[in-house]
Image (cartoon, rainbow, N blue to C red; front, top):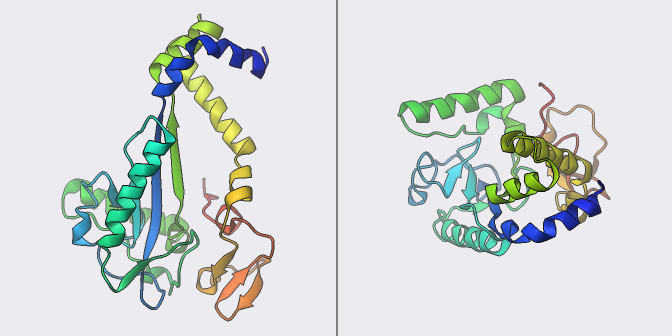
Length: 245
């Protein structure tokens, strides 16, 4: 059964697709007026990063993460993200800005990247200790890279209907696991087209490259490296990656 045949089989159960859920997580670095990573704590006006489901932090205290609720349409997810962004922009301390690019701002070494703090509860301490482990394994500089995470899930009604159509002898759980793995493989296969078309991180601050002794970047000015035809350095060899596991 080819892809077109499978799509045709979905026509009778297409109504289940409107139950699918979309969520967005958007990271941004807080920077000081001189363009360096902020050393200030998470703003109190944002609430606790441990308990606020919409505004939290990622690796660094300065790396804010905005999280939408699961929504049943892209428009709703984007509208919710816009509302959260509006709030954080209007409650950011006057001496700070949000860095617009995924590759970090001015960094002055690993020790100058503050690790996120979540209070003195057991859970809060565990989250901070986990980030210290990331710093030890991969270095803090790479962890300062920002990104956007797109989360998508199909409804249980869809999976059950789809399973009944093409593999009724397989358990629903096994069917779901198998096809989510297939989706992941296709993301790896075709996902390059997103940064190719929409990537906008063709340059990087020289402070980020301090530990990279070999690279093919060109000098743009005294503070910046770039690649003339790059689209997303974040997704390349110097971007966020896990070569340890």
